[in-house]
Length: 124
Image (cartoon, rainbow, N blue to C red):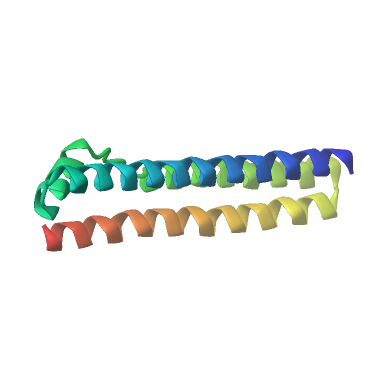
C-alpha cells in the first residue's frame, strides 16, 4: 500500500514539474515577444526570430511503439512460462491482459507515427 502511495506521489510530482516547465517556457516566450514589440519589431520579424530560435522536437512514436511491442511479447512469454511451470491461472490472466494492452498501445503508437508522416508529406 505504501508503495502505491509513493508511486502516485512521484507520478504527480513529475506531471506537475513538466507542466510548470511548460508554463515558464510559455511565459518567457511571451516576455520575449513583448520586449520585441516594445523595441519596434513587426509581427513578421518576431515570428521569424522565434522560428529561428525554436527547438524542433519530433517525438519518436515508432521507436516507443517497437519497444512497447517487444515488452508485450516478453509479457506473453512470461505468461506462458508462468502457466506451464507455476500453474498460476490468475497471474497468467494478468500477464495476458498486460500483453493485450501493450500490443494495442504499441499498435496505436506505430499508426500515429505513419499518420503523422503522411500528413507532413502532404502539407510540405
